Image (cartoon, rainbow, N blue to C red; front, top):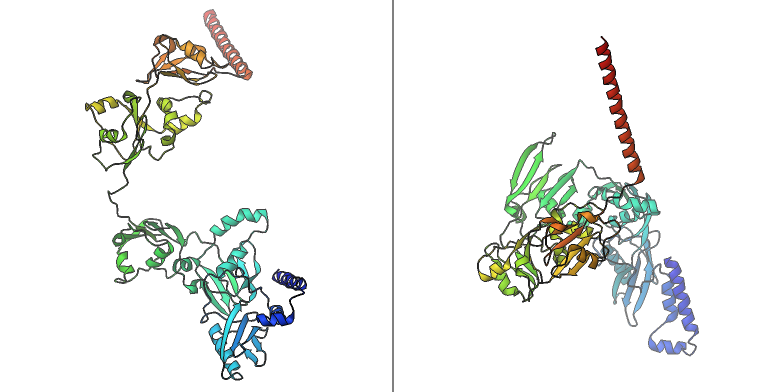
Length: 557
């Protein structure tokens, strides 16, 4: 792909030159451009080195650690007058060929050592000149990845890639089935025990430690011939850490782990962590508590005490320093001039104080206000205006057929804890209440309405009219629906939430009229009922006949 892009690039350059016939060679020399030389340079390269997005480096290459190999592209600059510049590539034999100078072996050396060898060789011919050498494009090669991966095999990587890059390539799905397996498989990888085989040596790669510390030794750069073996996580070999850390959870155990290692892997501690009272709990083979170790992690991190060696299965708990200085707040909504959330103290904040700041309007219905516990951060806070008429329903079990119009609302309020409050007494000073964190105070508006719901065609609010019967309100709500149980209409009083038969109470402003649903049964129900009746009657008749027969036999004797 890269060679294809390079060819297209050269074709575009040639096309550009063909479209500018007036640009003569003597003109280009005045500009200091030698296009022939530039084209020859590009023909020796594997990469379009002028593209800044091709390499995606995580940081500048360190000449002291980078190992040079076949395919690396270097630039040798001789600062004479005029200056000379050569772009050279490390050959398959591990050498670089410098025009007019000679051949220099560089493969297997660090970039710093290779630079010194090249400069020393060039200076043998250009004695009085300053010479510099720079890596301008890293090489690519194949490494092998096997073990617990989606696709074992050889993968093309670059000398600036790490073991983690090759592992990611081995988990790239090739079909939809692997796409489904990918996340589960990655979650089961032992990220702390990846084996890197290199030149007869085995190196343990610990990706969790690398991302916790940034130390290259836990995730080394790749070299030609590397063989990576990925292991599956052993559920019995773990370390758990909980409490005041940034990433609490269960991590793989590696022999030699210390307490500070796991704390780093868990993202470090949060600011409120109680470092002086850390606990390590150990169980025996039967799962019973064997040992509880109290540790001063603060001294360990400050290097004032030795680190603690961990064992497989250890569970670490870092407590959090609790403080009573929290974000206590209440919300007041409804018919007030200043609705919103108000900060309060942990205790001692009175409802009258919030009312003074919120300022109920002259349209507020103070006698029918409610306080909902722990509702500030719930969805109810946003919909309390529409849910208010249904709050009384939370303790009433509606069948699914009857809740067709308000199933969401009933689900939203079923776990709420609320109480009715006559705020007019709070305003007058007769009563007052101490508020708690999360309280939501709702003051409804004054309105002369009746709420009609259930099996009516247009459920909702209907204007109150003195002396009207419940049937009048149902008619204004669109009338009974086809499945309405007309003889069981209920009236719920707004102030007491007591249910009455529709004919046994007078309707007042704010009352609720509920029309239940008629029970509709399938024909099979009646067939089964009739069958049960017939069988029961038959059984009774048989029993009676048996009793009569026995009686007659006894009588004849």
